[in-house]
View 1: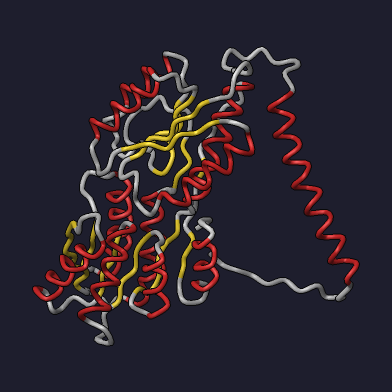
View 2: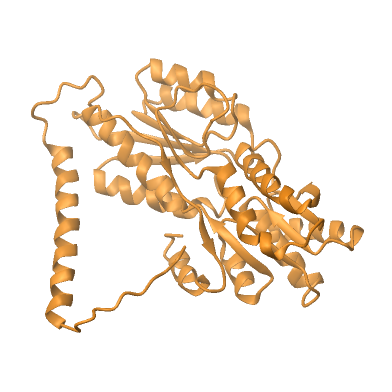
Length: 341
């Protein structure tokens, strides 16, 4: 993300106060509109509206306790408070497609009014999503979407992963030598977002005729660092590691910090953690791409609530590709402490 500082050319205190008042007024109007939407029942005949009781929404994901989902959860609960709805955030400990699909079916049985689902596989959730919608329970996606096959979900708030992989590759391409041997990592198999990012990276790197070795590190960064270090020792010609997810990005930085400091190694990848940001500050990780998870929790709540109350159709949203490097890492560190990044 690019941070810009704007100066008031005329230095008028009155101008500053006016701008602040205008900004505050704008946000107050937005909140009043949303609150008004929650209380005004006049003139709407939507079959989906549910105004007789507080709405209950279920967020269902894989790897539910991963650090990545902390800002997602904050976005969920901030939006739930704003819209006066109840939200539950549940999921599997690891990647278990069958168990996660079963949670969708159970959420419908448990009477949830709407579901936000992390659609990490292009096929595994098609049937349960369709059945939920047929029973009157709307489903939207968050974090990962299904672009490969027809799917009944109403919308998704997520990063466009293939394009994000291309964006990272274009950013680091000037620093990659022609025909370099590059290590590329995923922290889990069978996760479409990681596969899409990897494909985007590989497409751009063809310009440099890069040779690649691809490995799976596992979802624990400390153990993943050992996996990466072992592979680097097996291939001493590799100096660059490109990663596709949060834990393997952190793992690559840890491996360089522990085994290869000041030896010309560097990495770049995706997503944020306190350790990843520290490793960027130290120079072991050159950059990471933030997919802004806070909004991936926030906007599905807004979309489901507006749909259930007023029939306003949800729409797809791109969560973006914000580059974090040494130039802005200090600001992002502060925001991660507040769980906005």
